[in-house]
Amino acid sequence: MEQIQQLAYFQKHLQENVQQLTDSLLQKLFESFPDTFQNHTENDHELSYQFLHDLISTIADLLPENEVSNQEAVKWGQKTGHLLVERKNSLSDSLAKLSVHKRVLWSFVEEVAAEDQYHEALETMTRIDQLYNHIIHGVSVTLKEEDERKLSSFEEKYLKASTPIVPIMDQVAILPVIGEIDEKRAEILLEETTQKASKLSIDWLVIDLSGVVTVNDLFVNYLYKLLDLLKLLGISPILTGIKPEMSMRAMELGLFKDKGVITKSHLKQAVEMLHHQQS
Image 1 (cartoon, rainbow, N blue to C red):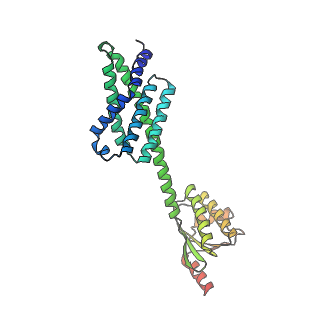
Image 2: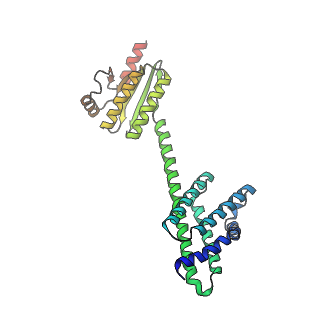
């Protein structure tokens, strides 16, 4: 019997016994993972049953091997990955359950196969294993994307929190800039600073740069934009703690030209100047 005929033979039996296989698989899962299922509500049970029924139907439908069926298996895995994220299930637990899935289907294929067809059953079992591997790949892709999304969201929240504008007296606030400044942080620094400064209704913003680790053209260019935006908002910027290399590069780029930017060597000097103006 050719491979296509072999797979079609077992596919027909799988498709005709989806309900029986679903019942059998659900029972095996109950036995193998009692802690997982013991607190299931009736609605949880129905959702699990429907999921397993759909999964077995999908495996049966995709049994004939071709590029389309492999892609569909990956897509099904991605959809499953989204369900895992929604239900906050772990990948390791899900993979353990998938091994039970495969054993149930393999046992069914072995039962269907006659003794002289065992090698044919083996090919079908191998194909079932391949389909599950494609599904697992789809699940892992989705979970990896979710992890990256969470990391990006956490990073953005952290960067926003690391842009503190601290009011120190009437109409005056300080922005300490600390650490490495890459493009993403520079963009958030620009956006958050202008929004927060505008809400505070300040006249002066002291930007202390003594904690900046590395000075490069990207940072100097973003600082140039920030000074422009602050002036448009009617806020007078004061720069303190400028390192010599930043000062030289800023002069080359015309950072201070016609911007009316006050500079001080130290933060203390700027605070004393503003305090003197207000007293």
